Amino acid sequence: MNANNFVNAVEKFKTHYQETVICGLKSFPPEVIQKAACFLQSVLKHQGTLYIFGNGGSYALARHFEANLKEGLKNSSTRLRSNCGIDPCAQVRSKNGFANVFVNVLKTEKVNVKDAVLLISGSGDSDNLIRAARYAHKRGVATISVSGFGGGKISRNETDLAITVPIDDQQIVEDAIQPLLRLIAEAAATLAQRKPLNINRSLKTCVRQISKCLCIVGGSFVLSLARAVCETFSGYRGVYILAPEGGRLSLSAEHTAHNFNWDAVYQIKCPPQRRIYTTATSCDFSGISNDRLVPGIVPVQQLDKARAGDLLLLFAHNPQTPSVMNVLHKAKRQKMEIFLVSGKTCSKIPGVKGISLGSPSATATPDLIQMLGHVTARVVRLCLKQKLGEEIKGHIATVLIEQDMAQRRLLGK
Picture 1 (tube, rainbow, N blue to C red):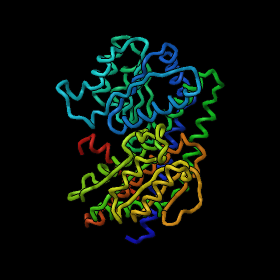
Picture 2: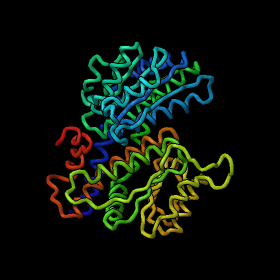
Picture 3: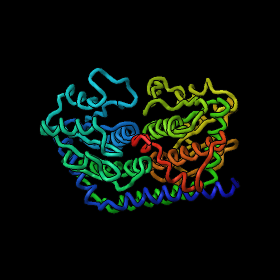
Picture 4: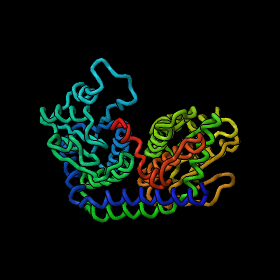
């Protein structure tokens, strides 16, 4: 396929992705966000526990929400005890059964009426979440669900408050739910601090950020990154996806690593082996607060095993922070191919293929980067199919738009 046509197809797909996310967010009247924020006030007021459950990508959304809410409350007298359980997709099925993993958390914790449960599901049909909702309901515990598509089973009289994001694409719905939950978390924290609430303005700002920042990301950059990942996989070299600043950015790094390792090779007959390394946790267990040695020492040490020609995809809000610069210096010494996606605009760094999203908000940057990760994973898959000589039926942009890989797995297609 002609290179310019491929770039144009990727650009068309990216625009579709961005516009679908924005339409999903615009479908919410501010009252829905305020109602969800007020819903959370009871657990904050009574110092109960907020349980936030989800599977796979929705588990990542749960952790993002937890981090946002705690960040918003850090300067207030209100404290939050939360529990995201575990991601059942990442554990061995226990003798109690996959479908009961969240119920088991509620049983062990002795959930009570002071608590609340937030359930996140792209499809709305996850049995383990529905069982958790029913278990909580029987014990008088308040429940709220956020799901995509038509809302699924969980939105039909299973929770006290059901929020549905009207998008029929698993990955895109995740990228609409994530900023929506951020707005709910920010609103809940604002109410807890008894500050004026302007949800309409916050929603408009969020939509504007997504529209502005993703417009900056050209199809040529996405295709360049996707092809580099494809070549790295094919050469059995390592792909490092790191976020030295930690926090929610590291959750986006983890999520993107999952997309590249799993979604990008979905239904490819003989996929190449992947060597992917990512920021392992949402915080930096480096002992910095004790020894003051090297900011971002964990990702720096991760690069000790990197070889010349390995690829580094670096996520950062402020690329000038010491933790990010230390990782960049190490990657250059290891002679890696480097891609940098940053929130704040910065000057060009020699030897780095970078793009700045122009995001003024450190809280919004992880959402925007996660969208880019989902978009790139689909393009990686197409590049792999092309490299392996597999037939690509239809127009490239249409294929990219319609290959909702996560949902196809769900439906068994």
